[in-house]
Amino acid sequence: MKSWYKGMAGIAIAALLVAGCGQSKENNPASGSQASGTTANEATASSGSSNPNKLQIVASFYPMAEFARQVAGEYADVVSLIPSGTEPHDWEPTPKDAASIQEADVFVYNGIVEGWAEKTLESVKNDKRIDVKAIEGIDLIEGSHDHGHEHGHEEDEHDHEHGDEDAHEDEHAHEDEHAHEGEDVQAEEHEHEDEHAHEGESETAEHDEHEHSHELDPHVWLDPTLAQQQVRNIQAALEQADPEHKDNYRENAEAYIAKLQELDRKFKDELNGATRKEFVTQHAAFGYLAKAYGLTQIPISGLSPEQEPSPEQMAKVVELAKEHGVKTIFFETLVDPKVAQAIADEIGAATDVLNPLEGLTEEDIAAGLDYLGIMSNNLTALAKSLKN
Image (cartoon, rainbow, N blue to C red; front, side, top):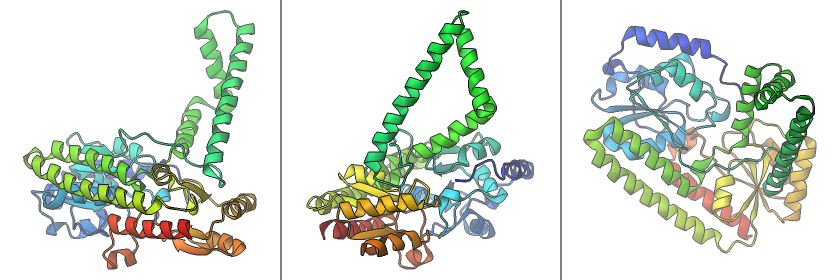
């Protein structure tokens, strides 16, 4: 995943320009249609069509925009920063996108997957804007770092963490032999060693943050029960931003949560009689869904789909797929399926789409598909593959 540092200078300049221009609601670049494919930049060109009296909401990418639209109803205009058909893991905001965030009443983002978000928000501060990190209050799980069996990987990571702890204990014991000037001195020496190991304290912080973003799985929206919590978080923000329509936002949220609860029941009913529990995915996006319904994903790539698997890693996926009798290799609509197809050819399996809902394609939009429709399609594909 690219660093969010890229383009930050341009974003900071855009923030100054926006602040200097003193744009009014009528010229708000975050205004626009509620259509699934509408982006902030598209909205800029048609901002005159928006209602300046409505709440202006900018969301990072599709699931966040969809949840916000469902809660907002007719009382807000919602646009998505990331265009339809764009994979969000490697996307970065332009100065125009930063300007859209600057002028928004509410900014909704998932967290972790938008590696650029926190730094951007620092650059485009607006005391009146409410920022919603939709994963707040959700217990996050660790994602798969290799491309093998996710459960086995988590055990390896757990052992690795213990190994690191033992190594740190040895380091502290060694320091105790040579330092007798108190805990503060030992802490300073330990920090000094870390500075040499990572070429500076600031670089260490950057490294830790980068690793952290890869360790925690951001794909919470693919579990219908966790999606409900995200809807609640968005509801609370909209009520705070627009108390006049508080009851409306609550009613809209309750209605949509009822649909998510029904979706959850369908997943439980359909997957209850599955003869297999393992499924192979293009990247490790379905950890929360697998955990919710007692399944095990075998990801070809890690948390970000642009991570190319090595031949050894692909061989491991093939081995696990054969071991568990996997008959279907799932690919995604926004990512080149060549690797998934190669594995399917190797084991004589079929291929099918399992959509991580990181963005809609033009075909999805033309077909009138939304979060609920695509999740239903995912359920059909999963149930078929696990029961055959």
